[in-house]
Image (cartoon, rainbow, N blue to C red; front, side, top):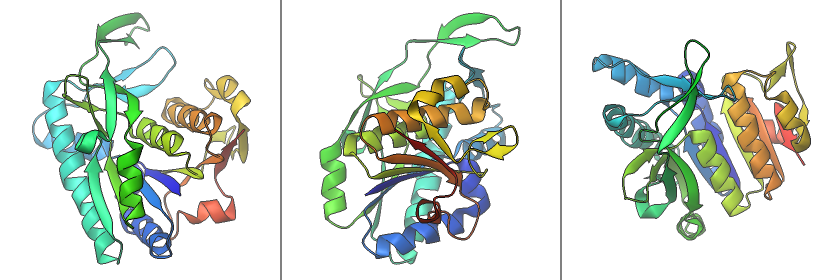
Length: 266
């Protein structure tokens, strides 16, 4: 059983290629959980609605979306509605028994709302701001996931969680994929991006051991460090390997068979 996550940029550039790659393996009986991002699509619709997306950077250099109440509305509409159902309908057209869920459905993902977060402002100063509607995942309903997988469904999961007060929360898709893979003890976690893997000094790293991750965080850029960190957590907790590879191409899931991209290993 594999957990596959594709970011919004990879989906926008190669949605058909990614879904065909998923469908080919699902039709052969591989149990798949597909977690989709879509931040760029959310941002596009926000701008169409006259809103400017907000992003913050943590002291560790991790850039993330700042989700206030208005942004949450657009986020849920796009992620749970447009993107999730478009992916589900296309997979079914390819002969896949697909079902689309958010983390709120059946309490699939339970999260703790972040009351305050520490950011680095435009002057380089650390300061605390209200946490908004973002969450840290605390629980995965593995019984629900395993029950659907046992019935032959391929799961398409949108990264929205349920907070302790039953409020909807934005949870990062890399975090969602990592937590699901860890909870299910998945064989592999595959993160598909718009680059060939983790790039250092102009070259793609073939392998990263979990004990090397911390030293690399400041060298690989704010867009990649979260992915590497989440992959390392998954591997430390029972996933045999996590792969960061290109989602651009005819058969992105072949990264697992071809051992391409960057492999995070114990």
